[in-house]
Amino acid sequence: MSCMEEATMLLKIGELAKRAALTVRTLHHYDGIGLLSPSARSASGFRLYNQDDVLRLHRILALKQLDCSLADIGALLDENGLAPLEVVTRQIAAVDAQVQRGQRLAKRLRRMRRELEDGRETTIADWLTILEKMTMYEKYFSANELAALRARKDGAGPGLDGAWRALIGEVGAALEQATPAGGAAAQALARRWMHLLDQSVGGDIGRALKVQTMQKNEARLRHISGVSEAMAAWVQEAVAGLRAALFARHMTPDEAARVRLRMLENAAQWPPLIAALRRQMDAGAGLDEAAVQVLARRWEALFHSSYCGEDGALLAKVRAAFHVEPDLSSGIGVDARLIAFVQQAIMYLHRPPEEEAAGPKPSAHMVAVLRAAHQLLDAPLVFEDPLALTILGAAEAEALRASVAAGRYRDPMSTALRTSLVVRSRLAEDEWAAAEEDGVRQYVLLGAGLDTYAYRGAPRHDSRIFEVDLPATQNWKRARLGAAGIAEPAALRYAGIDFDRGTLAAGLADAGFRPDQPAFFAWLGVTMYLEMEDILRTLRCVVAAAAPGSAIVFDFGVDPALLEPAQRTAVQMMSAKAAERGEPWKSYFDPQALAGMLREMGFRQVECYSAAQLSERYLAGRSDGLRMGGVTRLVRAAV
Image (cartoon, rainbow, N blue to C red; front, side, top):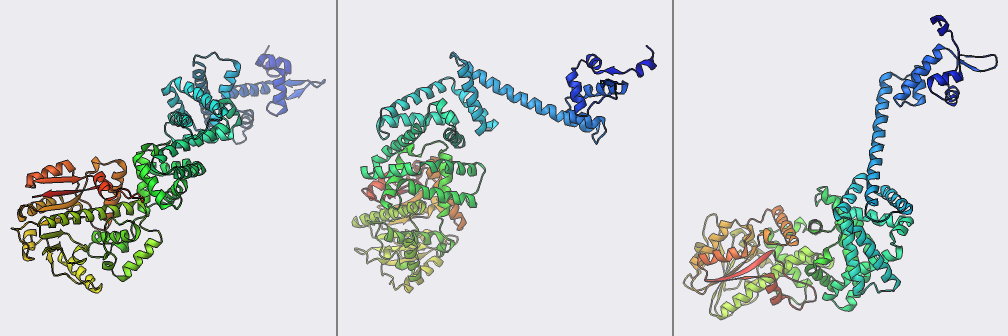
């Protein structure tokens, strides 16, 4: 056949289909969508394709090898706006998407294979159940979350699934037998349930919430897992019972029952709040950010709703329980880091307003305000000071009364600070009274601030009182005393000392101090604001200036490395606030190391009081939950 004859040859549809290895039906479809229509028809109406038609078909088949769509092929061949570069780019994207789909499918198949390789005989029904569960999980969890859950499961081994099956069976049996959710058996099951859930989600509260949501929404999942809605509710009640049993060690049975009901009513609100706070914390949010403050307020309000309502005595017992029962602070998503973040946020909410830091020394004024608040808030009083409100002045005393009436100074930070300072003042005055009975006649208040001891009545015997402070502070205090109508006692001596220009020994000598006679020194609320060398120099001066039989009581900040996480949080908050006032905390001590240094200086007897000792001595039997913290310590050293 010549080239001319081949060029003018017409092929019927069957012949073209055979040459192109296609079906006649495919060519009919191409004709129907306008992709390849025959150039001629026979007298009988049969399709006839010429050489141009065959060339177009070859191009169609070539483009199909690139996985182009028929629409794109038609647009390209008819030159309707598609360029070859665009076609190739689009096909690369399509291939990439297909590869990703393949990878996802491969991962899913590998997961399914692992499920099927757990050693159990697997039926078609089992296989379909696994497929159902995987499909449901993919509705609620991202690829990364699924990978994390799979990693947790792989790390735990086949025992995790077995443990869940066994526990679900036991809980179901307990429910059928009407086992009380508040009993010891239910509590043991609840503890195991929470442990397994924590193990399954890796402590991630967000994943735990998604599991809870999926379990609630997917009836089929409840059927597959065997965890009915009634069972989930029973476990939640048993968890509340477990926590109530811990609270019951610290309160009456009636109070414990009330706490248990409150916990059940509010249980559902805690997980999303914990998750939201953890997101803020992990994102590095600051305490002053609005979102953090809103969440902190929600936490504080939910804490009251969940445990004590407006019952202040019960609140004190709840806080005492949290302090000594670490299991009460445990739970999915709750760890020491989150607790510290929440405590810092709540403390930030209750930071004192700047106007309360007025006066010669912000720290001295804060002590005076909290000492006065103690007279209004706490009963019985740990430290009686009838002049505490008077020395503030009429206007400020009235403002304090209004603040207390409005609920101020009851937050954890204010309560802890107030307790610490009234106990330290009580200890100092008790030790001075004992020294005075033993014949000591000189009482030296180092950094006296707004202390009122000298003005509350004439000293016994013929003792003299020395107040050591900056001259400007003393001038302000004397003016405030005069305005309040408080007379200066004859036994009082002011030793105004500017330590940049003078020494303690010289200042005391100018005020009439007798170094040949024993003295009792009180140095409260000062050392943490001084450099280490300044503290040690002052203590050496006390040893050098005091006769045998002298002693000193002072407080100091404990090295944060020795504190529990919650206490370290308190130190961070207090020191940060002090720095804002211009009085940063500068020094901390290891109590044992400090005792050694004091003995090397020449102090013969050194006693460092622990928080437990002071709580037992001054706070035992209280119903308001006041207790000493361990952030600061008190020490008595005798020459």
